[in-house]
Length: 303
Image (cartoon, rainbow, N blue to C red; front, side, top):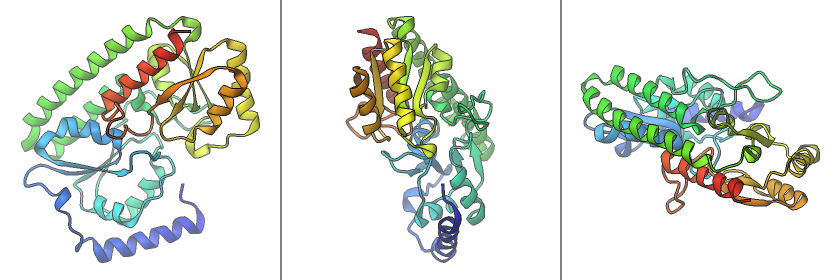
């Protein structure tokens, strides 16, 4: 998060840039003849939004694919884009607190949380919620419902389009939910433990019957201390869990240490804070969830 003098400096840089330059910036990429100009915080939400908005508007996101949204440090052009948007959709649950504070000071663009109504799961040992609600498709459906309601309120003329797109997308998410239930049935109960560097799969675990563990709770609190790593090594060694996993947006060296010292394999890479690059097989939210489940099943069911 942006703190102290560093955050204050960034604030004044952004203020100067937005006030002086936003009127001159070429906004052709985010301007549509009809519908809304939308900015969102990261790629997972952008994909959800695009599925509902369709050709009715444009959607851009701030945090690049491959970077994680917890501690992303925005640049002035990000806020110029937000200022030129009709709405800024965020996850909420504390994920973009750093971004929200600054945007609220440099732009009148409304900020809307798509996670509203999600039953919060706290970070272990802390009062604040885990922000990774989207990693359960059951919550993903709630995100889409919240999005649909807000889109209709902002653009009543597009209601028919939004409802039609949302209905189709919600059907896809419901189908994904059923598919997950079928796939994970092949995993023995004693192996239903997901271990990654950041303990991001709590909502997925709650909805599909997995225990989840991480070296640390959230990337913004990342430490990777010897004590944290040894705790996971002992957990893996004592429980007979056959595999651990790495994430696409997290330094993999910590989990490599766990795998080496516990004698289990890293079964594959999963996606948490971003969809995948082109060719990854996880280029959309649905593909990302399917990929994750396939990796979990391959690692936990076959040993």
